[in-house]
Image 1 (cartoon, rainbow, N blue to C red):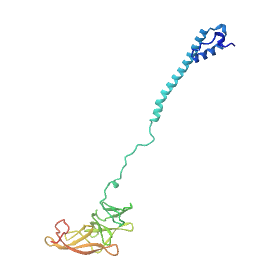
Image 2 (cartoon, rainbow, N blue to C red; image 1 turned 120 degrees about the vertical axis):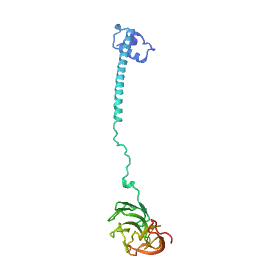
Image 3 (tube, rainbow, N blue to C red; image 1 turned 90 degrees about the vertical axis):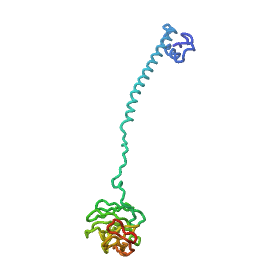
Length: 252
């Protein structure tokens, strides 16, 4: 079959390359007597527009699908998170409450915490261990931590004891437990006796006062050599008025 250039002469070079290729393709299927160059150009232009329309329709379909897909993808990405919301840290009531006293009660060089709740006394050691002692009759009054001599610490309370009087209770940390020391004589607090903690020392005094303040003997409470019995050691004389709420002071 003859080439288009032989039928119509050379195809003008100023035509676009794409249109020239279309002319070549179409001309190859037609007989020379049935077609003219002008007709061939018209047919080629129609074919080009048809193909261009198909391409644009396909692109439009892709765009529509893409636009419809974006909200779905965003909805999926913005869906419920699998990570639970952060919760506010909570603190237990026991951790919030400040201790009634801090002191080194097991002689390890670190402070321990003392808390009294009702009749229960709890000592939390620096190691985290908790030791508990419970009074028999009523909630005890905390007087303080003391040195019972020989560098042995103790915890002094005032509370009703077996004698039915407001007596001293001295607690010790021994062998991983909170135990009460044994007094050789009862140390009480009433109209003729008093007890107090001063500068880390447990003291008591007795006064057979008839009228007004008088000089009294002051005793220092220490731990005996056996490590669990209390003893009273004479210390000094001070002035004390049983009618007042003050501890014995200097001499009268």
